[in-house]
Length: 427
Image (cartoon, rainbow, N blue to C red):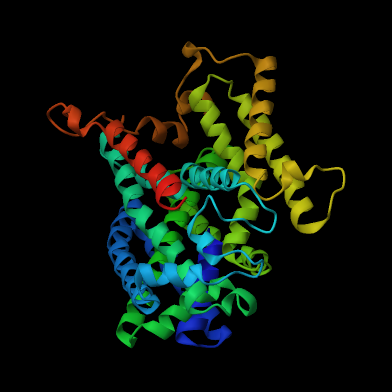
């Protein structure tokens, strides 16, 4: 995600501000350093407050450019009419791009398989992404955590739909992008063509806000994970709070810089969605499967490592087969871009249950806290800091939560709305 965001800023600076590549990379590096500085100084508090304020800028920018593109395309009716009169490079009516159930890619993939693939991508992203879970773990109570999750999902749904619609409108407004330009260049093109300078500046601010939000969240979350799960657990196990705080701050800078290593990988694809979809099945999908199986069953902890190794190895083989070398001994049904997601989950699950045959199911009385199970020295900083964590309350309210505010009901409504959008409105 760091690499994708860095590449997004580069394309934006090149396409909207029209500055040189050297100037663009210089500004990006300064932005990363600035973000690392305030993140290491202010911690989770600074991340949460700046992200909350930046989200307002991002939403305002998104609404601004969507409205401009909507007006330029003539609105919904005009877009549908023009799509109905045109075809894509494969002779398929462009109107099919508005209907998931009718759309056919070059491999004639089942639309249900594509929906399954994107569902796994979405679930994996929001489950495995520690930048999301870190914010939620800072909630006052379990009820606040659940409602924040639902509220965030409700906000991001129209953003995702609107972004996809702008891509479809691009098929009408600038059809030459489908043949001669990368789809990633469409957003800067829209900003240049349809926005006045002041509104263009708002869009630039929105993209920078999204970048800073990504940088500070990933830097803060992964530096904490590195310090606790790797450095304090394996490298340097008995130091002071001051020492580990210093390590965390330097780790933040290092992690943000690692994002640049992914740029050559991302740049080799025709668009960023292709790059994301290619790399997700390697590690994200197996890790998401481990979380899911761990919640739904009592598999032993050892099965998590076994599942991760098996799923990641399968993902690497699939990546090599899809992108590097055609492995004739590998079935395309297992590694093809859309089959890779459910196949990865199946392989990881089988490996975890196979491990259960050796170590047995986890009994309820075997469930112990992380501080008790993972830390051998009970007097160490890692053990003490774990014990200092406050228990998560069921609710922060002084009175019981009424049934009408039960998050489960709103989760069901949100799932129903999502199902209607996918299988109703756009099917």
